[in-house]
Amino acid sequence: MNETKKRPLLWGRLSAFVLSVAVIGFLTDQATKLWLLYSFDLGTYGPVQLLPVLDFVLVWNRGISYGLFQQYTDLGRILLIAITLAATVFLWVWGARAQSRLVALALGLVIGGALGNGLDRIYHGAVVDFVHFHVGTFSWYVFNLADVWIVAGVVGLLYDSFTESPNSAAKSG
Image (tube, rainbow, N blue to C red):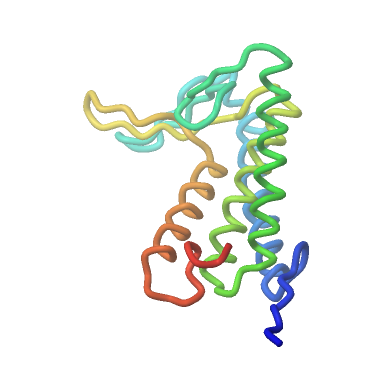
């Protein structure tokens, strides 16, 4: 008889690692936002040039990445919060089944970033973005540390999915 291996649903071998990465990412993101909003008071001071190509500027993002799908109603904001929570649960279950530290790290980063931006939507009604890169007339979108964690996590998952590992993200479903 062929035995099927039971896969964990909510807690697996690397879940503590996923949780640690997510919590550190979330807390770092929220600490920078709270400091810039309430201690530094970026909203009052306006743009602050840190380097010729880097400014801190306060932007309230009511949409998703790159300012897409801006939501100005409570229903739209609640839908974005619900999508964030659903995605977080999906990513957590994936993390419970992760077999490699790279996948666990990547999922923890995405979860921490998603929760950081999700809390912003709940508490502020929009995501707090503040990092602005620009060179000459080229201007990159304004983002925050949660966005960095999400992008880094996605890059990690993509890297893992293209490697010849038996535990790659593309093969662990």
